[in-house]
Image 1 (cartoon, rainbow, N blue to C red):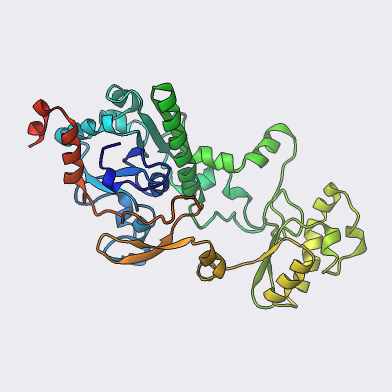
Image 2: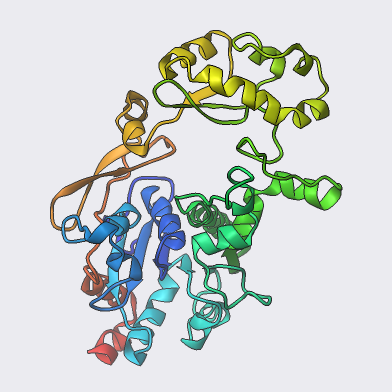
Amino acid sequence: MSFLDEYRGTGPLREVTVLDFSQMMMGPVATQLIGDLGALVIKVERPGVGEWERSYLPQGRRIGGESPYFLAMNRNKLGLAADLKDPEHRQRILDLIPHVDAVVHNYRPGVMERLGLGYEQLLTLNPRLVYASGSGFGPEGPWVNRPGQDLLVQAASGLAADSGPADVPPVPSATPIVDASTGFLLAFQVVAGILGARDAGEGREIRASLLGTALLMQCQQALVTMNTDLRYERSSSGIAAPWTEAPYGVYETGDGYVTLSMVAPEKLAVVFDLPPHVLGRSEAETFVLRDEITAVIRPQLRNRTTEDWMARFGEHDIWAAPLLTLEQVLADPQVAANHYVEDIRTSDGSTVSAIGMACAVSGVERADRLPPPKVGEHTDIIWQAVDRLRPATTRGHEHE
């Protein structure tokens, strides 16, 4: 290591250094996960204004002077301000490349190459560099220049088309599930790439996309679609997935909602009055009867509270869960017991409650190590560290 060691964590990625040009959600989620596990992550932003997420506010609300969305996925990073169109700033970035393991960005395809910061260009400075890029629809093909935003990809990938009952428009996920999932996948790919590059002594290029992730998330039904003649349609009764039988979905109770997962009619009959003709059927026949089964159990569920139903379902090992709001689940003892929420420090000295380590890792007790940086907060510290690593005859005078 020996490069900015005081800003590294104690986790298993302590010896990893990442130069992060990413913005919005996909890349920042990935690099935050890597930083949580001890890596040194240097976040490169435009001088003054920073990355786009800093200006994206929930109904105009800021916390500690910063966007809550930015705070949620930019901890454990150092802030470096650089104008990538400025030759002097760009040269300083090039000075940094030999000292990092990975570069991460999610600019549109071709942007980094035009700036002189593409994979092949940087590989000449660091032959073992891992270069990870994320895009909306992949680096090639007729959709390459389409805007790659989560909702648009949910729609264009087939992911949204299967949600909701048949008599209403499809219902996309409210949370940006493709952005977040691509971030998780990208973090895994970067770490794997670094291991491979160190072992082989040569660089690795990683190209993730929202479309690729959305297809991976649909791998089960995609294989069925490509290899059989089966085609599914959304159910009229609101079964949660077109390819599942009843009772898979959300139901109203006497005081709220409950969800039921995959439960055979014979098991449902233990707690519901079901007509005899729906029992003892084959899987294919049960699938055809799904709307009828749903219509039978729906009014019965309204006769008891969610708590009552959950107790009955638990007694008979029926897969079920109450439908909770985010506010309710965050206040639940289950979340506290697993330490999913942490107090994260902010750059102004205050704290915010945030989702911390979603996976427990021995040796890493907390995610909170460095607060999300102000724009360019560590620029001078980083450049001084780089200059100390350069030969004395070339140190510093080019960039005064």
